Image (cartoon, rainbow, N blue to C red; front, side):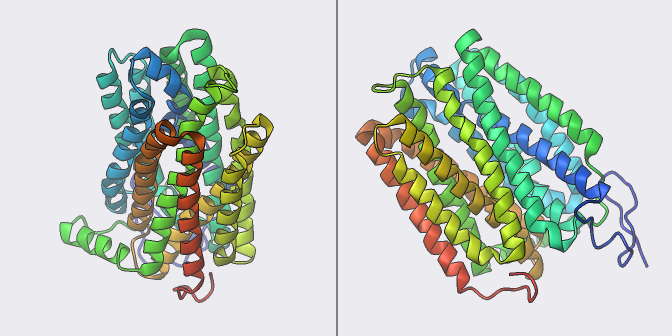
Length: 421
């Protein structure tokens, strides 16, 4: 038997050894991996969405429109999406853990630099760079989980990771909103940079080196073949589209929500408006529950239900009642993270069963996911300006309906794995 080496040079056990099947729930390795990736998810999504709660403040500080202010988020997701197309194939050659550590450290440095940006143009450039540095974690997280954990735990572990991203998204928005009300947007972004540094240290201490990673040949022909296979399967294409439309709907609502809550009749301050992001723990819980349900029943059954819950939440935000708006956001968040948690874990599993590189497929899913966030998140600012909140709800609802139709289509798509569906 032969052994492989991970990106850090540590020998992996030979194929067929006891450890090769992956860590199971309750084992120390499982706890370290899920804990590290939970912290990494918190860091990545805290900094990614750190400007969302600040959009009204940034619009005032730099004298830009609501639609222009959303560029501070959209450019970050564009940079992230494009960089994923490189980070995914790179991880197949260089390894998973090395890319995770490099991504988190670089992201913390850029996050701190954003706080010192002297102009709107420089801030946008730094936020674009932020997206590029962030790509290393999401590009490899689900592929790393598939390789290092036992098959029976894949959907559950993916749910835990997505739960960390939900908590990170909430933390970044709450921290920046609260700090900005007291000390301004610069200190708000600096606080998020410090948080990312702390999470990067936790990941460095906890994350085990890859044991089952096998590097692909470092040849352009091999990378081109991996990409071609990853876009040839109609099931994977449907999952990519679900990521784009569901994320687009979710970001559209939250991008415009700050403007709605700081305007009449609500007239809330930034810190108070930022409290709506306290619904995010519901997303953490729903992604974990959805992962367990998917392991117990099937992904095909859980995904359409998540879409139905999401659109119900979006529609609940229509009335001008703050309690109903909050309830709608909570329901929408639960549904969205259920869909995303299931879909993101489904991609590497289907890819592996079909002979497609898991890291490449995961990167393409996330490329579509963040492309949807960039395009539809920016459209939300235009929808708000043109037609107010009803226009934002119409945009978001249409996107969720497309996600639901694709999820139903996947129920008719043959499974590539005779055991897991």
